Image (cartoon, rainbow, N blue to C red; front, side, top):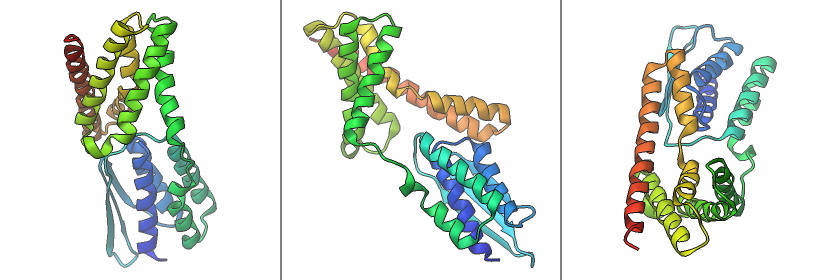
Length: 253
């Protein structure tokens, strides 16, 4: 048994799960079950939102450990589902290590990627459909659509200017959405600044991160839960500060 190769495969699968936004318990359990399926009795797996450590002991008692650092990431449900499905298949069939490692390595390339135009359409459509829920009319839906497009453009193409700091990027996007909402209502067909602004900001709300944090609190993963909660609070604060700045700038017109 090539323990180095087996450990690399388990660490890569855990990394892909973590990068897709999976819960901590899912990452640890998946990597542990995979190692146990290949004959290891007591593998140790430890994960926090930005780090994964996998350790096993060879029959000779020699410990072998792998650590992967997970960069800043969002949520990719398609990748998460494929990782889950592959893990179940590998645990059930236990194919040769070379075949299993190739399947794990091919996970990112197997995910269909949407074109920027389609993603922009999604960024615009989501606020447009939120507008009626907040009491907006057709013109508010149209304005929310345009604000959503602006946020999408900022997120997709503004990375080189805004950097990788999620707090700053979210603040700039929310300020842009709030400012554009005021301009569209004052100079255009929009009816309610509040409806358009709130609808556009919904695409920035960290709902999945906060839900995962609550799930990990109930599971007892306190450190991970606190980390995810703090991240969600920081993003929410960035949305509030950015929206306030955008409204302040809009009040000058």
